[in-house]
Each structure stands twice: as structure tokens, then as C-alpha cells.
Figure 1 (tube, rainbow, N blue to C red):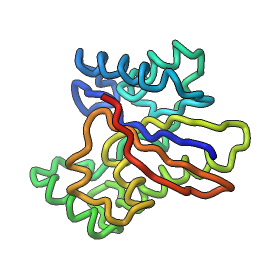
Figure 2: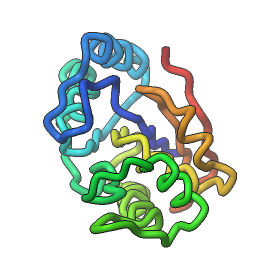
Figure 3: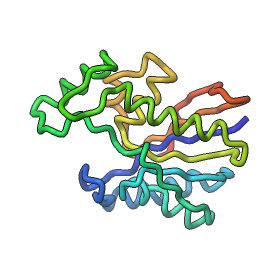
Figure 4: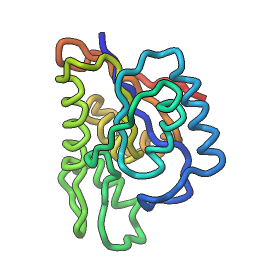
Length: 182
């Protein structure tokens, strides 16, 4: 059985792509490195956002595994316009996966991006255990893809970082579970 660890990045100073980890986030990154220390990881794929890369850098350095950047793992853009009621709009997008706001991305479009990354990993014979680092909304949409019960309330309860484990065998996901890290 092969494993894919889906990781939400550690605590960051903000939302822009260049946002750095906070002091707490840096500590969390070191704790993640310790969490993964006894696991054989063959591949690390992250969002190109700084906070995602920095989340896995301590571990990648320790085990000498190169971090691969994948644009498909960037955070979902709900809208390019300022939405004062963004939380309500986000909630609605969990109910209607095709709902789309100004120059934004629907939940289904974002979900398809991250599912494509997971499918690529599953269909690659070279690697047994992979870490994928992404952002909260995108991660929650992946979890919803595998578990329809996962919705807005579960998204609200995600932490930085959270780790979920996808077990896959013969080209399909066989189990999805939450893994406690800290």
C-alpha cells in the first residue's frame, strides 16, 4: 500500500503568495519534520507559495528530498474582487460546487486541480510515499472529493498544519484518515 500525506501549510503571516511563516509556524514546520522522521518519504510536492515550501523545508533538508513545486496546488481564488461577505460566499460554494464569483474559481474547478495532482501521484510507479502541501480551501475540496460529508464546517475546523493520509492501492484510494501531528 502506498501513502499520500496531504498537509495544510503551517501558520503564516498572511494570504499573499510571498507570506512567510510566523514564529509559531516555523516551530510547527520543525514539529512536522519530527512527525515525518520515521516515515519513508520518496517525494514532496508543494504549492509554490512561500508558506507551503517553508512548511516542508526542514524535513526536505533533513532527508535530502527535493521539493517539487506544482502550480495546481495554489490556493483557490474565490474572487478577484473584495468580498465583505466572503465567508458566506465560501459556505455557499461548498453547497453548489459550480458556483463562481467574479474572476474566481468554482469549487469544482479547484477540486479538479488537486484531484489531478493526486491522480498523477497515484499513477506514477516511481514513488511509494508522497507528501503534498497545499492550502486550507483546496485541501478541504480534496477531502470533500473523497468524503461527501466533508463541508464548510469541517473546513472551518482545519488547523495549520493538519495532515491527512490517503492510502492507495492499484490506482485507487482505499482509505482517508486524519493524522494528528502536534
